Image (tube, rainbow, N blue to C red; front, side):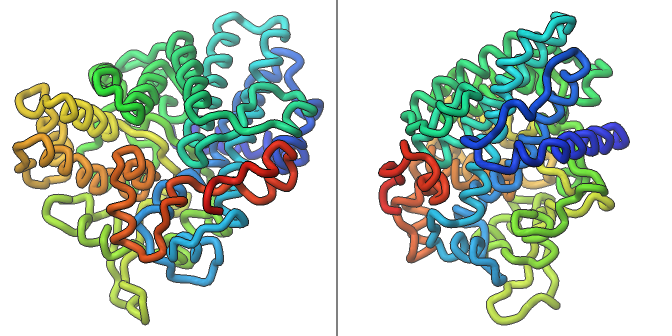
Length: 459
C-alpha cells in the first residue's frame, strides 16, 4: 500500500513539473492551452494533477486553522510566522498569499477538467462520471476553505482568462451555496466503497461517496444544521469503511492510517522537509513555531490521555522564551509520518457529538457523551464527567483540541461557535476583530481590478 501511494505522489509531482508555467502564476494568468485533456489517455494524468493541486494548499490550510488561533508561539526569525505568533497579520503575509493561490489553482484545474472531459470521446462513461464528481468534490473543498478563511471571495467557475482577470468578490453565503451544490453532486456520482472492498486501499487519497458525506457532515456542522450534521456523520461512521486506529500514537507517527478519510501524501523525492511553508520544517526542523502554553496544558492533561503524543518535550530546547515543546505530527517521508490529513474518522464522532449536544441528546447509546467516550477510550483517558448541555458542549470543544490539535481546525472552530473573541482576546493583547477573516492578499488586489477597493475590513 505504501508503495502505491508513493508512486501516486511521484506521478503527481511529475505532472506538476510538466505544467510549472501554468500552475505557478496566479489563477488570472493561467493559460488553459498548456493543460492537456484531449484523449482518454490524458484523463488519469489530469486527475492526478487536480489532487496534486489540492496537495499544494494543504500546508497553508493547516496554518490557517492552527497559526491564526491560540496553538502556537513564534520561536524563530521568519516574518510570516512572526505575524501569526504576535497576531499582527498583514495582507502581504506569504502564508495568506500561498493559500489563496493554491486554492484557486485547485479550483482552476477542477474547472478545466469539468469543461474539457465531457468533450473527450472514447472515455468510459463510468470513468467520466467518477472524475467529474471528484472535480466537484475538490472544487467544493477549495471554496469551502476559501470562504471560511477570507469570507467573500471571487466565484470562479470557468477557465476563461478574460473573465478571471477581472472577477469581483461573491458573498460568502453564495460561495457556500456552490460548495453544497458541488458536494451533493459529488455524493450522488462518486463511487460507492463497501467494507472489505479492495478499493478501500486508496480511500484516503481519492474522493468516494463516503468521503463526500464526511464533507457534508462538516458543512452542516458549520451551518448549524444539527440534524443534517448528525445524519451525515452517522452515515460515515456506520459505513465501516473507515475505522479508528486502536492506538492514537499511530495517528501521529504513521501515514495513511485506516481512519484517514482525506489525506495528501508525499514521497522521499518530494518530501517538503525544507521551505517557508513546510510543516516539517516549521514544527520540527527549525522549530520556527512551537506549541503555546495553553495548548500544552490541555494536551498534557489527564483528559487528553495518549493524545499528548501530539507534542513532545526536550529540556535541551529550553532557552529564552522557548518552552522546550515541539509538535510531532509532521515528520519526514523516511519516518512515514509526513503526510497531511485533511479529514479522518475521529472528526465524525466529534461532529456527531456536537450536533447531538446541540439537540440536547446528551446521554445513552445515541447521545453526545457516548461519542466523546469512544475517543476517550481510544486515548486511554477517563470518561466525560459533564452532565448539562453547556458542560457537554464545553467538553466537545476541549475534545476537539485533544483529538484534532495541529490538524487545521481550531481557528475555524472558534469562529463558527462564536468563541473566537473571548478565547483570542485572552490569548493575545494584539487580537483584533478583523482577524476573524484573513486579509485578501495584497498581490491579488494589485492584479485584479475588481478587488481594488475590496480589502477585508481593518486591513
